[in-house]
Amino acid sequence: MVKSKMGGMKLSQFSGIRSNETETPTDSPQESTPETASVKESAPKKPTPKEKPVSINIKISREQHEWLSDTARIVRDNNTDPVPPGDRVYPQHLIGVAVELLRHSDIDWSQMKNTEDLKQQLKL
Image (cartoon, rainbow, N blue to C red; front, side, top):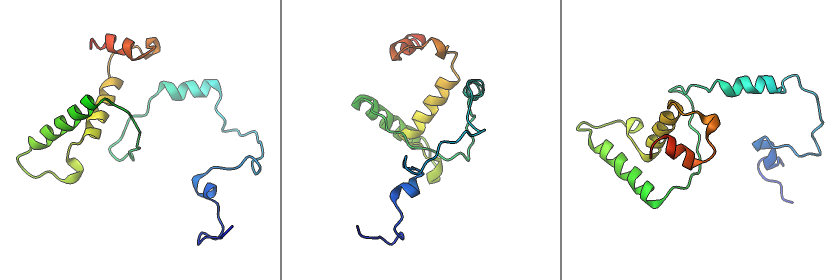
């Protein structure tokens, strides 16, 4: 095996992944109990403007992709004055707004079993 410029460090040391050989089981006081886990789940975190975005990989239909692209282009074209790059609307911004719309809807999420149930609740 050839040592790299990283001084012989393994990739797992950078990713936070630890091999099972080096881990020792410990009882941590920070482990969540069912009571604390339910408290964390019941209070969703409110996004802040400075919150770092994360990437997700989603599959959508070609028609949905075209609609998102066309709609984002329409929104960008609605501006008569130049808009700073950070304020321009792209498809991912529309998806973020859709997530917020769903979060603030009057849907009883505990009753949802699939996307068809959700579509019926939203009258789509």
